[in-house]
Amino acid sequence: MESLLLALLVISSVCWAEEGASVDEACSKKLTESDPHMSAYVGLKYSTVGEHSSDKAYNYFVGVCVDALDDQPGCAVVQMSNDSTHCIGKTSQTQIARTADGAWIELTYTGGDEYGSHCGKTPRTARLAFLCDPFIKGQGDLDFLEENREDVICYYLFSIVSSAVCGVVVQTSAFQIVLIIVASLLGLWLLLMVVGFLYKRFIAGAKGWEQVPFLEGYKKCGNLMADGCDFVCRSRPKPSYSYKDQAFGGEEDSDEEERDDNLLPM
Image (cartoon, rainbow, N blue to C red; front, side, top):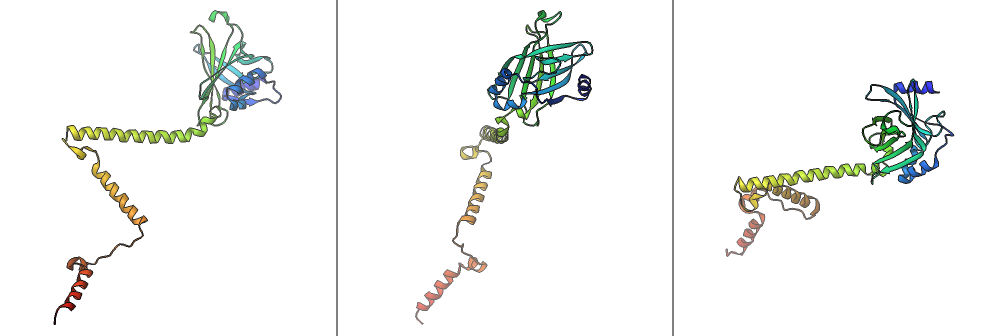
């Protein structure tokens, strides 16, 4: 089993779920209470390869509220190399942190094997960050980010990026994009108006309504809108005039003159 997993790790990050795997109820409750849609991750197992600054690569196996490997009971994160195997965090020792919008959720495993010569020989700690990205479908891949040994608290940092972490955020992302576009266009229009006003007033020396930028364009637009409204909404037919009417004063004037002629004495 381990030889097969190590062969897969050479290719890419792997995610799988084992039937009958024992889920830690306390961990599962904490994770699902932080965000109900995170229940889709409970019981999943991940594996990946992490390269360290010492140019040495390790194989990492991570379980979400479940043991990472069957031969490492009680261990949620396992670090494995050709000559050593370490438990980085216990399945039963977990902490949850999240942002207000749920776009970032962190599951921390503590109580791992103690460091040998650094980090004050404290127990190892693994931090698994779930990050929202609406454009990545599926459950996401596990990435090893770093092993931090500079701070007082040393830890191994992993991340899983997926749209499954977003929950409600994905449903509103399209509206947010439209809102951003509208706000950007409105801001650009206001900027053009202010710059145009300052130019016309202080450089071109315009006064009154002439200070308004693009005033002629707005007038033309208003006239076009009025013509369109008149064409679509008004039902009364418009009077038609011929060239003869325009040249000689119209048919009504001609008829009136003929009626006046009949009144004159013969």
